Amino acid sequence: MTDTIFFPLAGLIAIAMVSLAMRQSGGALPTGSVSGADTDYRIIRVAGVELNRFVPSDYTDYAIVSTDSGPVLRITPTQDFFPANPDSGPHFRLAPDLETVFSGRELRISVRVRSTAQDGATQFELNYFAGPEGQSGWRRFQLGPNFQNFSFEFTVPTANQDQGVDFLGIRPVIDGKGAGIEIESLTFVNLHLWRNAPPSAGGRR
Image 1 (spheres, rainbow, N blue to C red):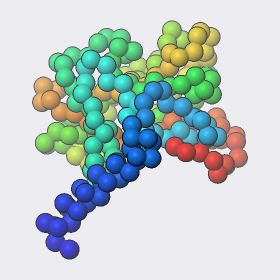
Image 2: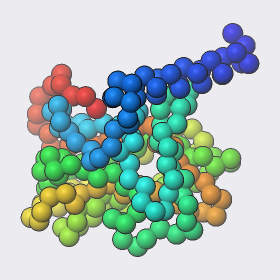
Image 3: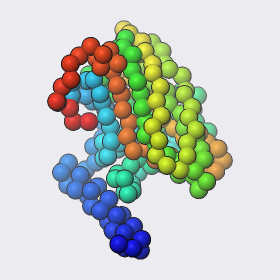
Image 4: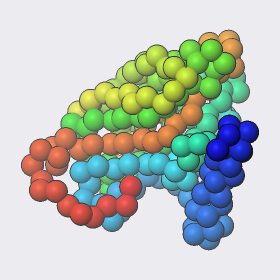
């Protein structure tokens, strides 16, 4: 099969995958907090149309777009700065069930991501924020034009306040080129459960 046939066909297949996922979810992309429902809480993976749970704030545009690897989340900055407070910027909010399971536990947070810059060079940052109890601080990574996995480990502070405050801040570094990022998947590994709980066949993310 020639390239002139293969690449348009691959694009049509990716578009069809997104459309099918939307039909299966009642015609609307999922929104709201990331939850661990129907999992054993060892691994929480957000991918495909589930990435639409992203909260862009007023500083980014975002879209679920079709690529040859399937649906991905594209994040593009719309301002020349981000706010100092991470809870005012782009993020994924975590549901209370995840806050409870993650409280006081060590996590490995991984993102599979690439740059949208023409030269493939840009950076992005991650920050696990747990409200007044603390945060990981911004962790910065250098990107290229191809999808790669980036991760860091962080022990979440023990929660002693109201629930509904934990989230993962995620943003491209504003570099004057207008470059954004594309995210293929986001994964939280609860290292405590991973080391101590037996494997389970359950889980939907």
